[in-house]
Image (cartoon, rainbow, N blue to C red):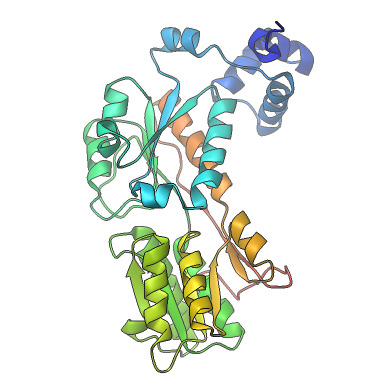
Length: 343
């Protein structure tokens, strides 16, 4: 039986093929910030080419680490198993983690006792740090991670922070602002908004940016045209359905997640109305509605960035710098919408 090539490749082989010192290769693979980005990219590209697989067991014995990251998603399985955001985000996390010699453990409600408290995954030596998506205000998971002095990365957060906590997120205020500007630029004045529950910082930020764009355009959005709902298909469908029964009926609806856009689209289809739904893009959305304007979010890059800064924090013992990523709106003709400025 032929042995997997990657299992036979060592850092010596990577060094020989790249013309670098073995110590330089080791620094890159350990996440050192002392190596230039071009050199790091060169090493990682050769790792992929030769299918290099780190000896995690040996590394763990040497460093007293598990070489694993826990990804905690607080939403229930109804969202996790259906949301197009999840596979794209996890792909980015896994690719970056693997390149730096880490594996990934997924934690979410319904998957067992540790899922309710990702701190237990680290305290039980199943992971070295935690990626916590979609924090809420005064989030108990964040409080637990800080209290237990666990390295973690999470989305934008307004509450108490800790020395091993890093925030990496998509700028959702900017996303909402872009969405509002785009719809107004296309002549819409009666506009609805379907966003996440009131506890969600992501939803609150998107709504804040959206309403700022409406205010600048002199467009009033009454409370009944703003629906904050759980991230599920059915909740979004029901919210959009209620909006479509109003008088006047909205001519456009903005939706801030990759899953709930489908619920809003289904409500419009069932009502047999011509209402534009502007939502977050996914491969499924572009396949089913190829000419629909969409919010293009860098989900895979978000996963890469979160994994990268978490591993850096684990290895250095110091929190990495906060990072923010941006969305863009793709119009029906595949051009990128350019708003006047970022809020």
